[in-house]
Image (cartoon, rainbow, N blue to C red; front, side):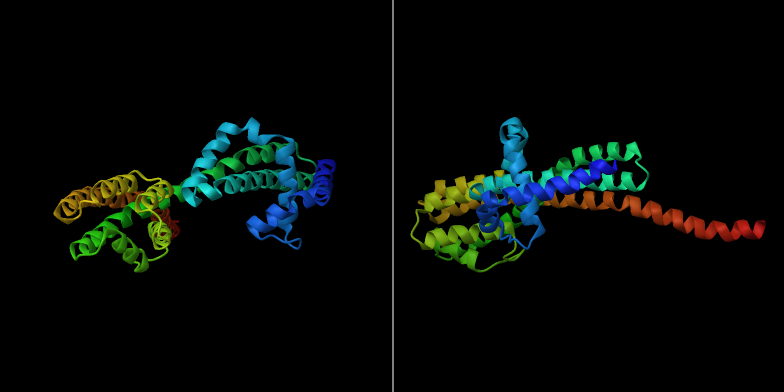
Amino acid sequence: MLALMLLQAIAVPTLAVRTHRGYAPWLKEEWGLETRDALYWLGAAALFAMERLQLSDRLSEPLHKVHQIMAGLHGARAALARTRWFTVRSLLSMWGCLAFFTAAGALMDGEPEMLVYGVLCAAAAPLVLYKQEQAKLLRKKRAMLIELPEVLNQLMLLVGAGETVQQAMIRIAEHAGVGGADNPLRQELSETAGALRMNASFTKAMEEFSKRCALQETTLFTTTLLLNYRRGGDEMLVSLRELSMTLWDKRKALAKTLGEEASSKLVFPMVLIFFVVMVIVAVPALLLAG
């Protein structure tokens, strides 16, 4: 066990020193890492291992799922770099698990069970990271769905007041409403508004907006808008009003789901508190009875 720990302690730094030059531009440009950062050296070693093991080919299906999640979180342009970085993080997490349990086994007089625990932990590490990214994407989609009815209401008010659809979209992006500018939907709208200011085609800008959001409701919103924005007037407002009712119903259903999830998360703390209260009440009674 001690020999394995020493092998890991020597092999990884040596690999990082020998291979870091080939990956330095990517690590610096994409992630702003410098030579003084430990992640710079460890990341270089992980990138070298990823290429030598040909993980992109051997794990094409799992990495494709990761790529889809990254595209939903960060957009299609950044998805490839984010997927690659996810693989680096996974490899480093696996190495960290093995190193920790190997060191623990060496300190416990070479207990072989610790190596088994390390292997199990290393196998679970990429799954944990994947679940975290999946949860981030779910939170992003929920935040978009909550914000979309508000955006649609503002659009109907501005169009009804005489604004063109393009002007209304730019105005909505400039003035953050419920959820503020930190809301992912507002961020995507800001990017769309920037494209419209640069005289981009409204159809093209909205199609790109729909792709970046990657949400069924935003696709429905974009389709309704593109089918009716040339008509304008009452016909467009009627279509938007019908869509608004549908989106508000979905928002109410989501709010109900979030409430149920919050209630279920409180069950375990409440049981624990009940147990503690029972102990506090029962111990004095048992002592007095004794």
